[in-house]
Image 1 (cartoon, rainbow, N blue to C red):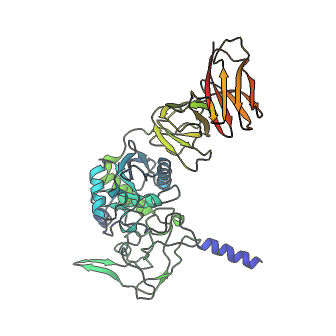
Image 2 (cartoon, helix red, strand yellow; image 1 turned 180 degrees about the vertical axis):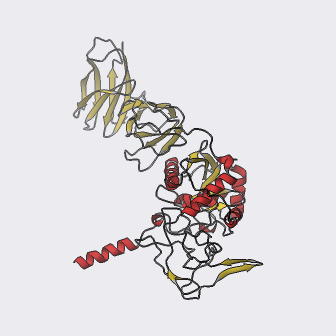
Image 3 (spheres, rainbow, N blue to C red; image 1 turned 90 degrees about the vertical axis):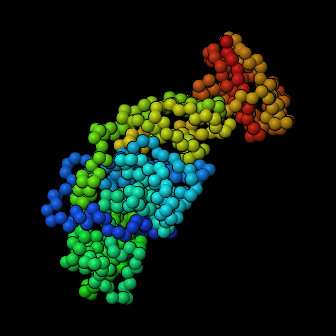
Length: 496
């Protein structure tokens, strides 16, 4: 029995599952070695640029690409979660990204499912903003890839299926934007063949030779990604890792030395579950690139502090209140350091689907009309451009109604309520039932703000005159919701 448990533990620790869509290739970024990085690493007198104590803040503009009919967009909540993951990945290197401006909405089928770089280039050229990292979220990308960095347009694409709070595709593509090549540089478009002899080099162009990095790293300054603290890597297809975050596949260098690739590096093609870091030399290169080539991107503003963790309360509507289905207003208390709020509305209390989604700059929104006679749940997430990681409020709930002039539940069941204009001294009103069916009736009394005040039930009233108690109600307008298993009505009464 102990032996079986040990085998199971070894199996679990040696194989890690994809957290992104395995139907897509990891990246379609060009394998051309970055010119800036080649010159930087070739300079023996380059200053050391590793991050100090100050955090560098870089602007990020997000373009959400949907279909021409406006459908297909990646949910805003998932965008925020992905940006939080991006910042978590870069936090150890004192690089952070803030959301610049509103999420840009693009509705074009040709860009939503673009499958060649020409279409991607046109999309970027048309919509990208200056002095910011432009990321386009689409449904598909060229080469069936999760994403790519377009070198000439200097913009990024990440597809929806490879976004998410547990993925690192965005981190990988931003690494390209910050000058980093793949750890397996030179093997792009090639598949390592363990049965074939590993060559000394990939190609020769004049005096330049594209060497294959050896396992001992003796040619690390001129082979592979040219970072000596990233081990040799020949794997250009998505791969899983063992419990030590190394490739399951053993590779053999040109001198016959066996090795495994490091799957913990964000610039490899290991699966998301394996990745967790950049190397020190990669970190140095990223900061040098920012300082030397992207210095005008760095925010000079003092970042807004984190959104207050204080609990948020709803102002209107009342919890479980009754709300007219037209021109619905939602309001909540403002939290310090929150500049925006994400509002979700769903038919489900656990928000398995989001029916409506809004971004609000204040703490109140008119959401317009909702379908009548349904219970809706809503929640609010506070954020600012530098802090998108705060959670949602607890869900609130309300039910929509429409005041009707008819007095019938259906053709067999009628009722009349009178009087509807009532003196403050009255303690009850009349309900004249004319029901052919045996139905239990529940009548809820709501204030004009949607707060339920009273409830009274009538068991199978049939054809009878009953009274609804209203004692204790002050002057004002009230709503009566009459509920049966065959249908509902909402009527209005006024107490003078």
